[in-house]
Image (cartoon, rainbow, N blue to C red; front, side):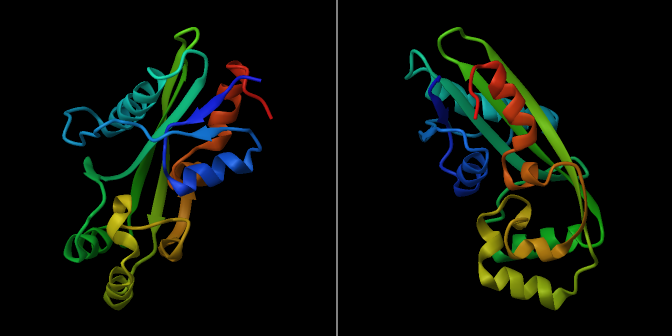
Length: 190
């Protein structure tokens, strides 16, 4: 079987790929993300995922590299990691009672043939109406400070979501239902 390398240090991407029961190793990408690039959010997610994959691919002669990049969007604005409590509160308050898309770009590169597949999976998420007290309590927990969109759908932030249109695993960071058939085309099977 071909060697599969996950170009990510994300705990959640690792966990999702493990659920697919595909053997893989992990290598941290040496890539500086630039969220200020002027391109539509869905294209940016794919572009950043490809950059991560390429940074690992150049180190291997015969492997399949997979990477991903995920972020939220609201009315054309990218919602990266808030880093501050004020920003997290403002983002969550803005999303309260509304729909927003989550874009996950995935990239797969075969370093032996040079073949690559790059695409974006977009999932729509709707938040129920949030009380300011629950936003404050969540922000105080520290969980949203390092999370794109200021929440984690796989942890406490899941309590804010009342509807999803699309792939839950894309929200978490790796659209496995899309990825597994792509990997099969590269000779990576369960």
